[in-house]
Image 1 (cartoon, rainbow over the protein chains, first blue to last red):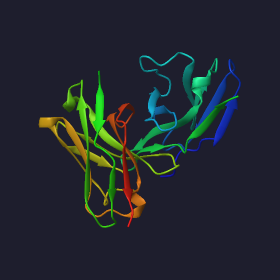
Image 2: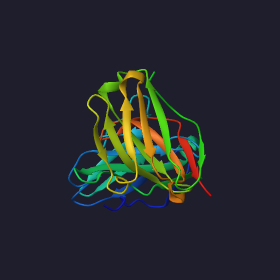
Image 3: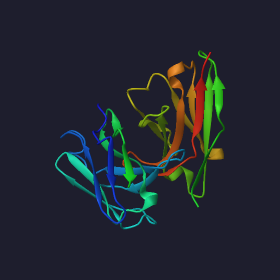
Image 4: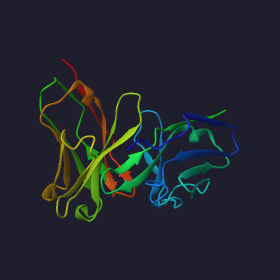
Length: 111
Length: 117
């Protein structure tokens, strides 16, 4: 099972919006609504930002939103703030053999 | 408050054994799966496996299933990740996570394992 495909990097200006894509296949992202997104600042543990494609845990700002179309999931961050600069990883349940796979990660730069 | 507190950094030689731990608190330990995620130096996250403390049901990634053992001790609300013979390629940060196969809602602070001769 290959890692899900994410862009290596994205960037945006403060106040603007960015979208990070996460492309899988019909066997993983396309088959299950169990996509989650994690934010990781340098030297820190990751943090859950989105689960079940589009749900936000308590405490996560509503500037963060998730969606899915076919085999591609997306994380959109609106009203970019400096503290949003981090690495972002998507993750999906992929069935009863490999179970779970992460994307390769996307570095978000806030210009 | 949910907390996962991991054991400290380790430096080992190839071929040595190792067990690292993760103590859960602030929630009913047996109600949630607890698992492990690896991050090699400068690389991305890699899911390793997950254990259900209530019955020790375990799901391990095919990429590591013959290399590590995962277990829990309900009496002290602690999860373990164990190697019998370390390799240099096991050098990584290891995070314990609470959750399920669908998502991981709490993360430990990480345990850095360095394997070098």
